[in-house]
Image 1 (spheres, rainbow, N blue to C red):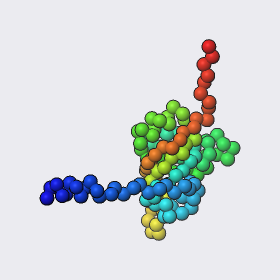
Image 2: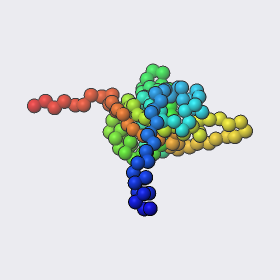
Image 3: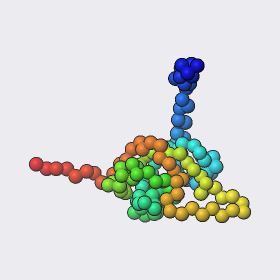
Image 4: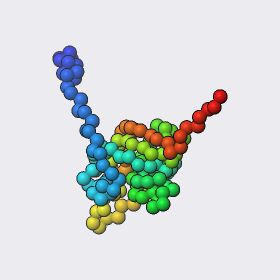
Length: 138
């Protein structure tokens, strides 16, 4: 009996992670219910990432039009350590969206403070520092 259960456990397929939905910060903010619980692929600027505030913006902070709309990135020490020395930086990542703080419910006031986990990083796809690395001249 135990052997049969063990064999069954080995052949039971593991559900694959859903393919990310390529979208934009603006599209998510316009219709958060559509993306709630989904893995989304985003690109944009992380202008700052500190323990209580980390977000992906549409534009760099020093843009003439300002940084634009943003989505909060949940606490992730590995993500933070990777991008911290490159800030501000342009990133592309896959993340699971929790739209709890984005969806307005009639009769309810949702208060979300500090580092709200609207986005939980699944995979950091690329990081591009706005400054080229220094070259060493012999």
